[in-house]
Length: 180
Image 1 (cartoon, rainbow, N blue to C red):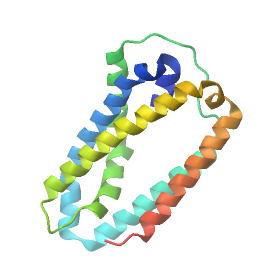
Image 2: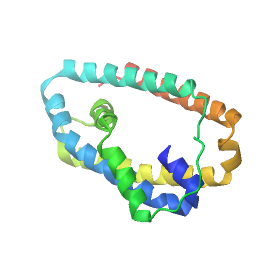
Image 3: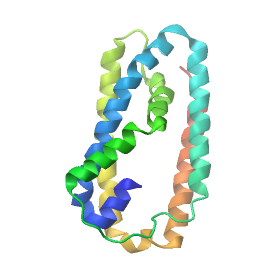
Image 4: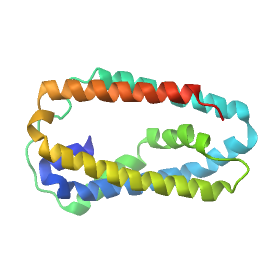
């Protein structure tokens, strides 16, 4: 939402500082989560299964929440802010969001092999994730900038909410059915 809001307020280039803040925050939160995930993987298959199902339920919850979205972009006025403020805002949101750490704890264990170097694998996953965050959010900003009128409409909000809800629901089902 922050990326879309920044893109609508400042153009796609003006959204970039926030995008980099989100990616940096994700990298930091993932790093803090790394030791917890390592302990879980090393000690308990049961804990892995519990995390998998809790993660799946969380994704299903997000899917339901997005499905019910009525207004995608809140009403706002165009304001001028410094790029560094957008970076700090996005970084703060990511660092203070407990759901971000939960995401890494719930999703990443499925992609880490206990036989290989845990920290190297985790660093590769986190780096890949941060790069994907930059690419995907840049795409969001470009699309938001070009679809400004439609995204601000109630109809656009409902359609985006339904598509997002279905996507999260599918990810939740896939996660619940995944095996280690």
